Length: 66
Image 1: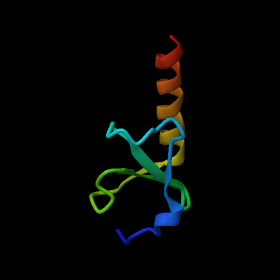
Image 2: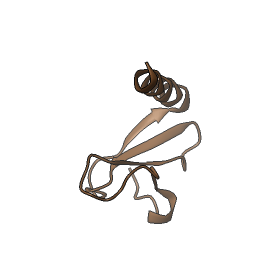
Image 3: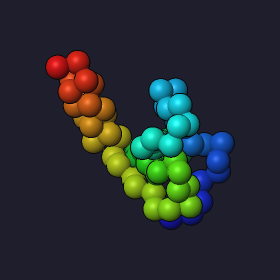
């Protein structure tokens, strides 16, 4: 996969930079969300269909509040 500009990646505002397990996301590709490890930005990038990503976020929210 081609490199994505650093300005295109977004990290959660809940990420405090204390070395935790954080990811960054990018929506530069039509129909997909890209995900990478924020501490290893040169590492692999995963691509998820937008619908799959939305379902994942919904389940995370359910687990957080349930």
